[in-house]
Length: 198
View 1 (cartoon, rainbow, N blue to C red):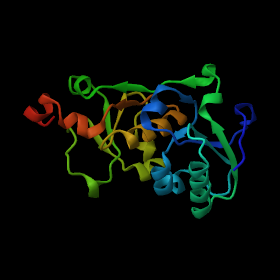
View 2: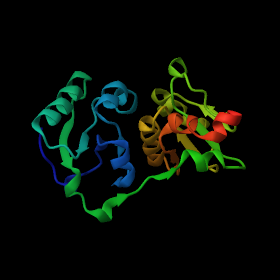
View 3: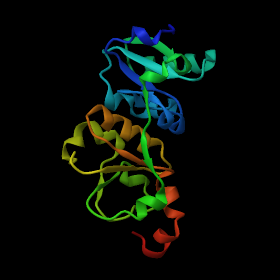
View 4: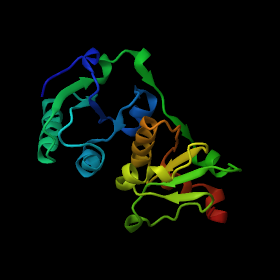
Protein backbone atom coordinates (compact mmCIF):
# COMPACT_ATOMS: atom_id res chain seq x y z
CA UNK A 1 0.00 0.00 0.00
CA UNK A 2 1.37 3.39 -0.98
CA UNK A 3 2.56 5.80 1.71
CA UNK A 4 1.19 9.30 1.16
CA UNK A 5 2.03 12.74 2.48
CA UNK A 6 -0.64 14.76 4.28
CA UNK A 7 -0.30 17.45 1.62
CA UNK A 8 -1.45 14.96 -1.03
CA UNK A 9 -4.96 14.73 0.43
CA UNK A 10 -7.42 15.92 -2.17
CA UNK A 11 -10.99 15.04 -1.34
CA UNK A 12 -10.51 11.35 -0.53
CA UNK A 13 -12.55 9.71 2.22
CA UNK A 14 -10.33 9.57 5.32
CA UNK A 15 -10.52 6.55 7.64
CA UNK A 16 -8.58 6.99 10.88
CA UNK A 17 -7.84 3.49 12.18
CA UNK A 18 -6.31 4.53 15.52
CA UNK A 19 -7.85 3.82 18.92
CA UNK A 20 -10.77 5.90 20.17
CA UNK A 21 -8.57 7.66 22.74
CA UNK A 22 -5.88 8.53 20.20
CA UNK A 23 -8.53 9.84 17.82
CA UNK A 24 -10.17 11.93 20.53
CA UNK A 25 -6.82 13.51 21.42
CA UNK A 26 -6.29 14.77 17.86
CA UNK A 27 -7.56 13.99 14.36
CA UNK A 28 -7.97 15.42 10.88
CA UNK A 29 -11.24 17.28 10.42
CA UNK A 30 -13.47 15.12 8.25
CA UNK A 31 -11.92 11.77 9.23
CA UNK A 32 -14.08 8.83 10.29
CA UNK A 33 -12.68 6.84 13.21
CA UNK A 34 -12.93 3.13 12.41
CA UNK A 35 -10.42 0.72 13.91
CA UNK A 36 -9.69 -2.34 11.80
CA UNK A 37 -12.48 -4.46 13.31
CA UNK A 38 -15.06 -1.70 12.87
CA UNK A 39 -13.80 -0.96 9.36
CA UNK A 40 -14.48 -4.56 8.39
CA UNK A 41 -17.93 -4.45 9.95
CA UNK A 42 -19.22 -0.98 9.04
CA UNK A 43 -17.21 0.68 6.24
CA UNK A 44 -19.59 -0.55 3.56
CA UNK A 45 -22.40 1.41 5.28
CA UNK A 46 -20.44 4.65 5.12
CA UNK A 47 -18.46 4.76 1.88
CA UNK A 48 -19.15 4.04 -1.80
CA UNK A 49 -16.81 1.27 -2.97
CA UNK A 50 -15.70 3.19 -6.06
CA UNK A 51 -14.55 6.44 -4.42
CA UNK A 52 -10.97 7.16 -3.27
CA UNK A 53 -10.10 6.49 0.36
CA UNK A 54 -7.06 7.01 2.55
CA UNK A 55 -6.16 5.37 5.86
CA UNK A 56 -4.62 7.28 8.78
CA UNK A 57 -2.64 4.99 11.07
CA UNK A 58 -0.06 5.12 13.85
CA UNK A 59 1.01 1.51 13.18
CA UNK A 60 3.55 1.30 10.38
CA UNK A 61 4.09 -2.46 10.67
CA UNK A 62 3.76 -4.29 7.38
CA UNK A 63 1.29 -6.71 9.00
CA UNK A 64 -1.11 -3.92 9.96
CA UNK A 65 -0.83 -2.19 6.59
CA UNK A 66 -1.38 -5.49 4.78
CA UNK A 67 -4.44 -6.19 6.94
CA UNK A 68 -5.92 -2.79 6.07
CA UNK A 69 -5.30 -3.24 2.37
CA UNK A 70 -6.69 -6.78 2.34
CA UNK A 71 -9.79 -5.76 4.30
CA UNK A 72 -10.52 -2.94 1.86
CA UNK A 73 -10.12 -5.31 -1.07
CA UNK A 74 -12.35 -7.98 0.49
CA UNK A 75 -15.09 -5.39 1.04
CA UNK A 76 -14.93 -4.38 -2.62
CA UNK A 77 -13.25 -0.99 -2.27
CA UNK A 78 -11.47 -0.38 -5.55
CA UNK A 79 -9.93 3.08 -5.04
CA UNK A 80 -7.57 2.80 -2.08
CA UNK A 81 -5.13 5.69 -2.49
CA UNK A 82 -2.82 4.64 0.35
CA UNK A 83 -2.08 5.56 3.95
CA UNK A 84 -0.78 8.50 5.99
CA UNK A 85 1.22 8.12 9.20
CA UNK A 86 -0.40 10.12 11.96
CA UNK A 87 2.96 11.33 13.28
CA UNK A 88 3.56 13.17 9.99
CA UNK A 89 0.36 15.25 10.15
CA UNK A 90 1.00 18.86 11.24
CA UNK A 91 -0.45 19.66 14.67
CA UNK A 92 -2.09 22.73 13.18
CA UNK A 93 -4.31 20.44 11.10
CA UNK A 94 -5.67 18.48 14.08
CA UNK A 95 -8.72 18.99 16.26
CA UNK A 96 -9.74 17.30 19.49
CA UNK A 97 -13.05 15.56 20.09
CA UNK A 98 -15.42 16.92 22.71
CA UNK A 99 -15.94 14.40 25.51
CA UNK A 100 -17.75 14.19 28.83
CA UNK A 101 -17.29 11.82 31.76
CA UNK A 102 -20.12 9.45 32.63
CA UNK A 103 -20.51 11.20 35.99
CA UNK A 104 -20.82 14.65 34.45
CA UNK A 105 -23.25 13.36 31.84
CA UNK A 106 -25.54 11.90 34.50
CA UNK A 107 -25.57 15.30 36.22
CA UNK A 108 -26.84 17.07 33.09
CA UNK A 109 -30.19 18.81 33.08
CA UNK A 110 -32.19 20.46 30.32
CA UNK A 111 -32.77 19.54 26.71
CA UNK A 112 -30.22 17.46 24.82
CA UNK A 113 -30.11 14.25 22.79
CA UNK A 114 -28.58 11.03 24.11
CA UNK A 115 -27.76 9.09 20.94
CA UNK A 116 -27.36 5.36 21.61
CA UNK A 117 -25.64 3.80 18.58
CA UNK A 118 -25.74 0.22 19.81
CA UNK A 119 -27.79 -2.32 17.92
CA UNK A 120 -30.88 -3.27 19.96
CA UNK A 121 -29.98 -6.96 19.64
CA UNK A 122 -26.76 -6.49 21.62
CA UNK A 123 -28.04 -4.30 24.46
CA UNK A 124 -27.61 -5.85 27.90
CA UNK A 125 -27.09 -2.57 29.79
CA UNK A 126 -30.09 -0.25 29.41
CA UNK A 127 -29.23 3.36 28.54
CA UNK A 128 -30.56 6.26 30.63
CA UNK A 129 -34.06 7.11 29.40
CA UNK A 130 -33.86 10.91 29.53
CA UNK A 131 -33.78 12.40 26.01
CA UNK A 132 -32.81 9.00 24.58
CA UNK A 133 -32.72 8.36 20.84
CA UNK A 134 -31.55 5.04 19.42
CA UNK A 135 -29.94 4.82 15.98
CA UNK A 136 -27.67 1.80 15.44
CA UNK A 137 -24.26 2.87 14.15
CA UNK A 138 -24.74 1.01 10.88
CA UNK A 139 -27.93 2.99 10.22
CA UNK A 140 -26.56 6.45 11.03
CA UNK A 141 -25.76 7.42 7.40
CA UNK A 142 -29.42 6.95 6.44
CA UNK A 143 -31.07 8.08 9.69
CA UNK A 144 -29.08 11.11 10.91
CA UNK A 145 -31.69 13.46 9.42
CA UNK A 146 -33.87 12.77 12.44
CA UNK A 147 -31.32 14.45 14.74
CA UNK A 148 -31.77 18.06 15.83
CA UNK A 149 -28.59 20.06 15.21
CA UNK A 150 -29.70 22.78 17.64
CA UNK A 151 -29.38 20.40 20.61
CA UNK A 152 -26.24 19.01 22.20
CA UNK A 153 -25.83 15.40 21.03
CA UNK A 154 -24.08 12.96 23.36
CA UNK A 155 -22.96 9.73 21.68
CA UNK A 156 -23.17 6.45 23.59
CA UNK A 157 -22.21 2.85 22.85
CA UNK A 158 -20.99 -0.05 24.94
CA UNK A 159 -17.46 1.11 25.75
CA UNK A 160 -16.78 4.18 23.62
CA UNK A 161 -15.51 2.85 20.28
CA UNK A 162 -18.65 3.31 18.21
CA UNK A 163 -19.61 6.39 20.22
CA UNK A 164 -16.36 7.95 19.01
CA UNK A 165 -16.92 6.67 15.47
CA UNK A 166 -20.47 8.07 15.44
CA UNK A 167 -19.25 11.43 16.71
CA UNK A 168 -16.58 11.53 14.01
CA UNK A 169 -19.25 10.95 11.37
CA UNK A 170 -21.62 13.55 12.80
CA UNK A 171 -18.74 16.05 12.80
CA UNK A 172 -18.46 15.65 9.02
CA UNK A 173 -22.13 16.66 8.75
CA UNK A 174 -21.71 19.84 10.77
CA UNK A 175 -22.94 18.53 14.13
CA UNK A 176 -20.96 19.18 17.31
CA UNK A 177 -21.29 15.85 19.13
CA UNK A 178 -19.92 15.05 22.57
CA UNK A 179 -18.62 11.55 23.34
CA UNK A 180 -19.51 9.91 26.64
CA UNK A 181 -16.18 8.55 27.85
CA UNK A 182 -16.23 4.80 28.44
CA UNK A 183 -19.73 4.39 27.05
CA UNK A 184 -22.49 2.51 28.82
CA UNK A 185 -19.98 0.51 30.83
CA UNK A 186 -18.79 3.72 32.52
CA UNK A 187 -22.35 4.97 33.08
CA UNK A 188 -23.34 1.68 34.69
CA UNK A 189 -20.46 2.01 37.15
CA UNK A 190 -21.70 5.38 38.42
CA UNK A 191 -23.56 5.39 41.75
CA UNK A 192 -26.24 7.76 40.43
CA UNK A 193 -27.15 5.34 37.64
CA UNK A 194 -27.14 2.41 40.05
CA UNK A 195 -29.56 4.28 42.30
CA UNK A 196 -31.98 5.67 39.71
CA UNK A 197 -31.35 3.96 36.36
CA UNK A 198 -31.50 7.39 34.73
